[in-house]
Image (cartoon, rainbow, N blue to C red; front, side, top):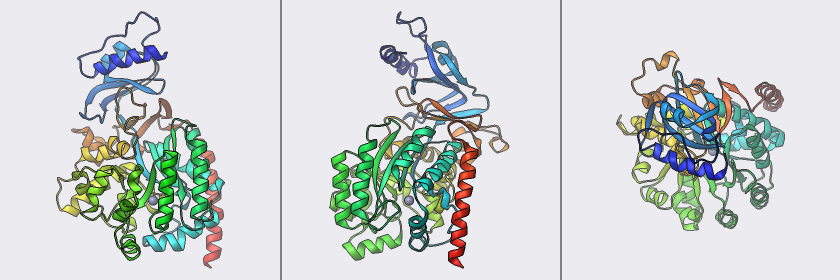
Length: 477
Ligand SMILES: [Zn+2]
């Protein structure tokens, strides 16, 4: 389909959402008009658009990676013929999940050190293990393992922060996911840099190499936190991000330690400190935000900071309970994330949804807060907005990139189904995801991964983990 007919079709199908029924496009140009790459059917199609449109016996028409139309299967069938189709029997179609904060390659450190406080865990276990073991090969295998797990669980977009970002980008390019990849900036020796200045220089190189290289990949900066970088280094990172025109992701207001560190060193809490630095002049994706003060929450809303809630990691490391409801009420853009597999210990966004809801309810002692629809929005359209990709992904709407999943509703835990959205948040899990499409490409079909050689990744990951385990054991002896 050429650009002109695509535009005409888009105009027609936008109307399809509001008028009853679509008819086949007829612009007299092309007898093959109406052919599209793919139609994805669903017993129910949950669009997550602003009106929360839901279609029973629905379908999504996709061509050249773009959603052309969403509507009833009858209307879509009348308007389009597809080269390929995914059956909707027993399946719900919805946007792919957006994991707003991860350290993908840390899948290889899954379970290496559990049941520890954040700073003990970081300084005594994770940072030393990373300096010793993390190299491009570790990052390649760990990121492939993570992408396998994320695709398997219905995640289509993720925001990553780790070392050797070129390697992460190469894996993302080949496995077909969409990602924002942060070059980590940290004020200490790390696997890929000698310190803050070196990591900033290397990060800039990565961003220049990848800035306009691939439409699914956005390179960004990832200054680690305000307790691993000083004010000058944070300002330098902001300046470089501004100059290169890219966003930043950072850990922010995560733990009582950070709160105290910030007060001791800067006389103010983290968010106020960064705001005074002018840090939020750049689009910022802030992970965790467990301890914002009452005066800091309006700053997050005004400066359009995208806040990523990581309930599992916050619970496991006992960082605290983020005031998600208060931030949403204040108009803060909020998404969900898993954090790395070393503090979770999986990359299951369904679990994040469920725990986000339950944690707010018990914290506020109010079962009405953070209802299912709000949580599902945080994992899809809201999360996409929080990371600055709301115009291209996160909901099923004509013109957006085709990032969507099919969820099987045939297992016993879905029986009976009164309310699909309720089940998606409170029942479904990653084993229910049946098909995953990113940018119009099918990455998983009938629960089979198509872009990752899973057996190769399994054996490479196990072999690498064996050598790490042997060395850790010897060291601890
Ligand atoms: Zn993190």
